[in-house]
Image (cartoon, rainbow, N blue to C red; front, side):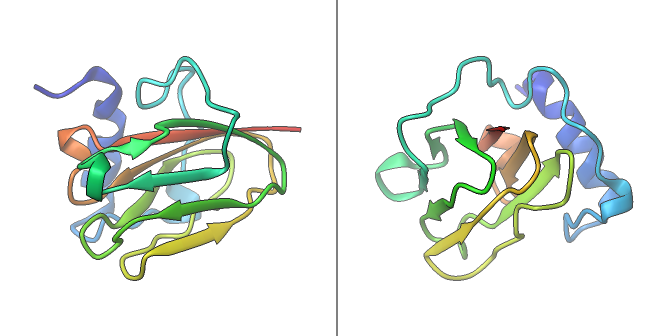
Length: 130
């Protein structure tokens, strides 16, 4: 069963072609509730995935401050990272390696997903506050 929160993701993927790449001009702001996130974890800046977490992100819903470094840790070859929505194209599409660290310089909500398992619920969001 596909969650209603995934419908914009699937539409964006269909519009972007098989590679799942989003151009800056195609990027839309995230809806009020993106990827099921209604509560945010502000106790960490690391999102882990794969391994013990299976096809999910931990935490799924992360809150950080503008310019705070965020690290994704897992196997990107198995779980390629893609951004689906947000105020700017800022989450790097990553399909190799084991970690990626980046900063979001604009406040807002950024939705992301695993381009392999997103339709199975491997989705998340980062809420960036000033």
